[in-house]
Amino acid sequence: MIGKDLDKALTLLKKGKLVAIPTETVYGLAGNGYNEKAVIDIFKVKNRPFFDPLILHTDSLEKVKDIVSEIPKLALSLAKTFWPGSLTLILPKKDIIPDLVSSGLPTVAIRIPDHPLTLELLGKLDFPLAAPSANPFGYVSPTNANHVAEQLGDKIPYILDGGSCNIGLESTIIGFPENMPIVYRKGGLSIELIESLIGTVVVNSNSDSQPNAPGMLKKHYSPNVNIEIGDIDSMIKKHNNKTIGVISFHRSFDLIPKNQQFILSPKKDLHEAGKNLFSALRALDQINPDIILTEYFPEKGLGLAINDRLLRAATN
Ligand code: TXA
Ligand code: MG
Image (cartoon, rainbow, N blue to C red; front, side):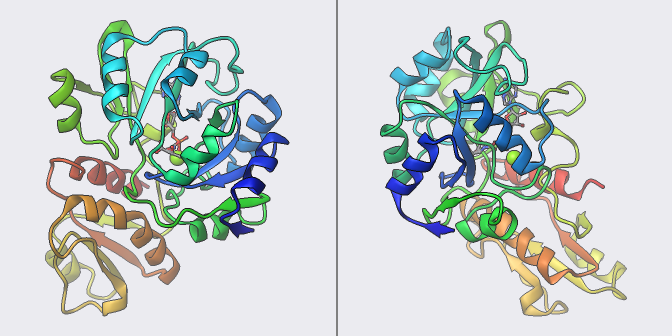
């Protein structure tokens, strides 16, 4: 069931039930992060392997301090500048967090999301919400309540509707092994903004060196239709005997039916493009063409996260 009833969401969560919640990045599948049973249910509903740790969500730095044993200086400065926002920090966890949440790791992922409804909800709870993206494991993340309903509607009691996600790409994840900031997932907060605050960071979102982080698996965020990335004009020629779907940055293509092409931002705005990406992938998956053709976005700002998601979606 979809609705905007905050009290209903609160009551369910306090009973250990799951509720899908809106955030500015993507919708999350939320449950009480202190309650092992709720956490197990999250993994089951998503069909997610238990080795893929979850993100905890809360609404204040004070509450973060209940959950983590230490906040390195750089992490604190990032938190104070970018929270609420599309940034997840990996920090040493306190024992109060069940090992299931962190898949046995000594660290836990945490973020304060920037969505008014969810901030209000979190403010009324005395536990953090564990919430991965509200999609079946490996599929494209949901950026509105209907996306969640389509895939998980019959598995959870309530979807809190907070409209379409403003950012539309998952959060940027940063960890601090040996006090060195490392970006594990490119996301809704750009590397440039992060570096403008704390200086150069290492980006290591490579699946091989991060076996504990399936968000970084080569194949992820993936629709069912095959995707090819490159020069769209030449790929249209190459695939002229097929039905084609297109996802482009700002151009339209005369040879492709209008309803099969998704122009993410005619005004060339990477923020707008990021916001529209996952709906386009979902819509084309439903249309079910033989192939989806797309292109590399500019390698700056949110273009980095967009290219990252396209590459993983294109991996067979
Ligand atoms: O924007 C987001 O981050 C959304 C919204 C709902 O907040 N959540 C989200 O969660 O994308 P999920 O579970 O789909 O992705 C979380 C990623 C996973 O790839 C996981 O491996 C990584 O975070 N992660 C969690 N805990 C970690 C840890 N202790 N060390 C390294 N990676 C971790
Ligand atoms: Mg996910």
